[in-house]
Amino acid sequence: MKDLTFVIPIRHPDNLRNRDMQVQILRKTFKSYTAQTCDNWRAVIVANPGTPLPELPQGFEVAWVDFGPNPQHELKQHDFKEALHFFLFDKGRRVWAGIKAFPDSRYFMVMDDDDLVSRDLTEFVRDNGGPNGWYLNKGYGIDPDGAFAMSIDRFHKTSGSSHIVRADLYPLPEKDDENFRKYVMTWLGAHGGITELFEDLGKPLEPLPFHGAVYMVNNPNSHSNSNSMLRQYVINKDSLLRPWTLPAKIAKLRRVDKRFKDEFLGGA
Image 1 (cartoon, rainbow, N blue to C red):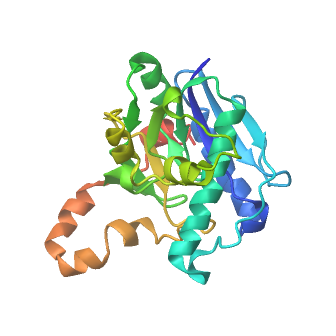
Image 2 (cartoon, one colour):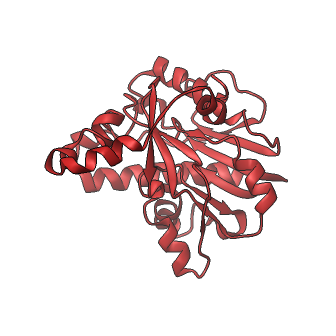
Image 3 (cartoon, rainbow, N blue to C red):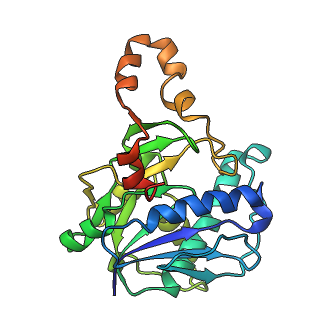
């Protein structure tokens, strides 16, 4: 049994803006996973046949699905609330399929397909297993090929790659269950309210005591259409309205040096 399984849902190929770029990004993120200091991990790619994928490194598996494309994938072209509903269902059912296909793991971590992970995650889970799981209160934001990373507080409210959950706390329904759609949207598709959901269950998650992941900002293929890292977190509207906050924001910047690359980028 694996200590930790990363579940990486990939959107339908019809929802990809740039297939070549998708392969380049996945190649970088896959390298991040393979740097784990403990080798008792697995990464599960959830994808449709025909999805462009780079060569899979050791430790990776694929859960093939036949789900159709998300008809409202582009948020800006549809009513936001309705489009978000479609997005959460599409992502949630893909995560569900990944966990169902490879259930033999003590913990699961849902990942966005362009995010990076700390090389210490699996070792930490191995050495500290037993709790309900952990939420990533701290992480980094980084532009593709950026020279600086930004430390992000309340990372679990920003990134979909921010919760490690003990396997038995995912009582997965079957697809024909009347609660299937609601379950996968709430528990597997969304991320902003996960800590509160587990608290309400009496199964609270603990804060991970280190920066556990990197949120890829300004990825042109991203569903969130986010701005560049500096525009989103440093030189933003808040800094213009409250310029005295700028020094504190700048202090959260970290150079993407060898140490950072070794921890999150597989030494790239």
